Image (cartoon, rainbow, N blue to C red):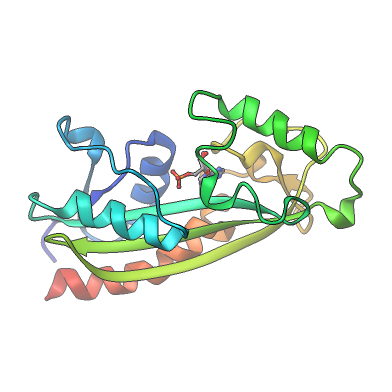
Amino acid sequence: MSKRQVLLATRNAGKVRELARLLADQSVEVVSLADFANAPETVEDGDTLAANAAKKAREASRGTGLLALADDSGLEVDFLAGAPGVHSNRFMGRKTTDAERNAEILRLLAGVTAERRTCRFRCAVALARDGQLVGAAEDTCEGRLAEAPRGENGFGYDPIFYLPDRDCTVAELSADEKNAVSHRGKAMRRAVALLRDLLNE
Ligand code: IMP
């Protein structure tokens, strides 16, 4: 199979790393919006992760001739009625750091028992070509909010996302271990089947 380009519709270096690794076996050359300096920023104003992923993929694919792949992910905390959810990247405003957001979530959960600290990562993946949505997939990873941040790997909310089965946070997993269990890894494995068909058309 010849190498074909897939455009990852993100500038987030952590996501590019993870998505590129998940596509490593697919004989595709991965580029991202970081390679397209003039690409406009998509306004993520959808009501759902799936709507935002679709919008990002459609906008990135427009004018490039490439198959674009976008993901939109969020952390859903049951004690916070599913927040930050679709607003995960705007939680507390745009200028906060990951560490500040993690500290704020732990503050909001202070004193809450382990049983009530349930949460999940959710990931929606969208594929688009020439401005049209051509595929979509979604999956989740269940866990509990940690009592304190732990681990140096991954990005975003990983240090406060505790996996009871493994007795560690997502930030304590290696990249391959995270991809095996994560919302993005699972959603991407569904999307890769669609991607393969689209590239072979
Ligand atoms: P978005 O999908 O780029 O809109 O990301 C939403 C927010 O969720 C950002 O603050 C990310 O840092 C965070 N996020 C997305 N995926 C992950 C992940 O795999 N681990 C931890 N945080 C994540």
